[in-house]
Amino acid sequence: MVKTSPAVLDPLQLGAYFALIEVSSLLRHAVEQQLRRAGDLSYVQFQLLATLGDAPRGCLRMTDLADGVVYSRSGLTYQAQTLEKRGLVSRAPSSEDERSIEVAITEDGRSLLADVFPGHIAILNDMLFAPLTGQDVQTLADVLARARDHMRQGPARSAAPRGRAHRSTS
Amino acid sequence: MVKTSPAVLDPLQLGAYFALIEVSSLLRHAVEQQLRRAGDLSYVQFQLLATLGDAPRGCLRMTDLADGVVYSRSGLTYQAQTLEKRGLVSRAPSSEDERSIEVAITEDGRSLLADVFPGHIAILNDMLFAPLTGQDVQTLADVLARARDHMRQGPARSAAPRGRAHRSTS
DNA sequence: TATTGTTATACTCTATAACTATA
DNA sequence: TATAGTTATAGAGTATAACAATA
Image (cartoon, rainbow over all chains, first blue to last red):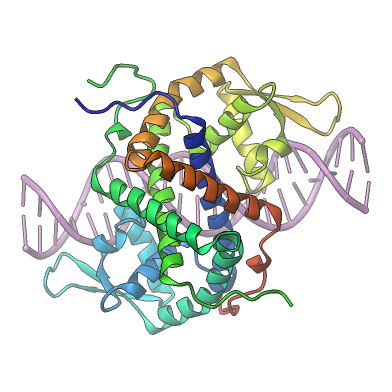
């Protein structure tokens, strides 16, 4: 039988959850404003550009690009079109699979990333890292990485049928 | 002179940042879906209801309610109206300060919260807490609380003028 | 048939600025 | 004048479903 989670959180868990939500929310809001000012980018657009910038040849298929950044295909199409109009990415059919589109970051895209990075990093340092020790950061990275890997693995069992309908795990 | 942050992040910081963003993003997306299904609530609406539910008499002024959940006044007005139409909150002018509106969670609001909580908590347990030890949670709560308190204090100095303005917004 | 991606469409949410009213 | 809140409006972003094309 699958281990059933208790129906409540202990205060420690509640604190961790609230702090996580609040920290990421405040951080994201601050970073979004900086990205908008420095490069007229939304956070999602920045994530897409940064993902491409890190990719082997600055180039990924739409589907792979979407992974983890965007939650619907049409949403990615929308953003990719926006970025393409600005000349920050280019799109071309894949030679291997004619169904696929390969998205590549352009020179302008890399240049904009470079413009935006310093301010981005400054915010992270000032807001997030300033009050933390090296050990804190180490632990944070370790624990969150474990959580992330876990989330990436199985689709959350409880993502489906809870709440209103109070039937037990059927 | 203000201490200047280094222009780059070390790999550890980068890892902590990415993991934080990814974890909170995955978590929030999962929770949003659950809230929508179980109670037809957006995350912000849930936060507002939950904040009211925790308040001394289930009642807060608009301004205090906004704090930390919403980033503009009109945004709160919009959400408060939405919740009021559904009978989940009520609004009445404050007797002390005629300018203020006091928002109170209703019985229906509390009932909906109760409907939604179990599924919400189940997701947290399954996605976030399952792979973590009690010590992990303890540390996470501690470190993130410190970060949050720091963020709450001063408006980030770097929120203003960094990253070379790329004014070609035309 | 399954997969990749686009389009049309409708909707939610947010932000800015102008506004009213009270302190 | 400053504060509390609303309104009008406009724009960004997202999701769903129907669609075309390739594997």
